[in-house]
Image (cartoon, rainbow, N blue to C red):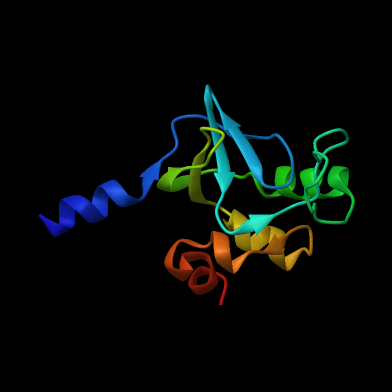
Length: 123
């Protein structure tokens, strides 16, 4: 039973993801929000009253796009309030949340990290 759960936990993506911004991917109709990171918002996306991460949103998106090398593995952990899949995604260059943090194109959010999953992955 445990091996079945482990096999289901990290699954191959069935499409090539596309970066929407520095912390969100689109895979077919599925929108995937990378777990535990917050990247600069694209112009017009930082709603009034929100504290958005400073930085260059175009550089952040380009960095994430650069990391998109197959094969991809996804570990879904839930949905956010916008209906996006919350997940860790890894490709040939490693975990994408870690990639963005190492490139300084996103900020780590412990309060968005599911049980410290990303913190452990990025060590």
